[in-house]
Image 1 (cartoon, helix red, strand yellow):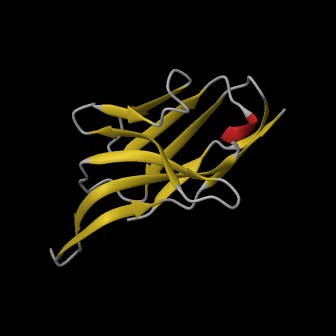
Image 2 (cartoon, rainbow, N blue to C red):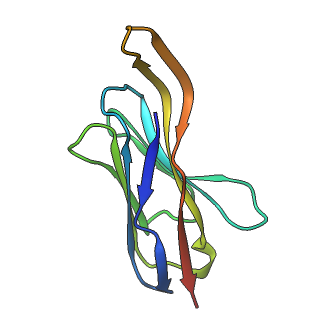
Length: 125
C-alpha cells in the first residue's frame, strides 16, 4: 500500500494550506490515519491522528490551528492547516496504522504502518 500526499507549498505566516492523502488502493483496512512531520535536523513527530470511529488527537503545538478529517472516499485523509507559523515548516507525511490487505491470490498482508512520500510545507515569516 502506498499513500500519496499532496497540497504542500510555500505560504506566508498566518496563511493556510490543506494537505490531502490518498491510498494507491482502496481495498485495505486500517484502524487510524494520521499526519506526521519532520523538520530539518529533527525527528519525525505526530501532528494529528484520526481513528475509524472519528476520534482525533493533535500535538499541542497545532491544537486549535489544524484539523484532521477523513474523506468520503475510503482511506483518504486531509489536514487543514490555518494560522501557519514558520515553525510549522517541515516535510509532512501521511500514515495509516495497522494496515491489512489481500493479494490477488488472497494472501493477507499486514503491516504496522504504511507511509506516503511526504509533501513539503514552507512557512515564511
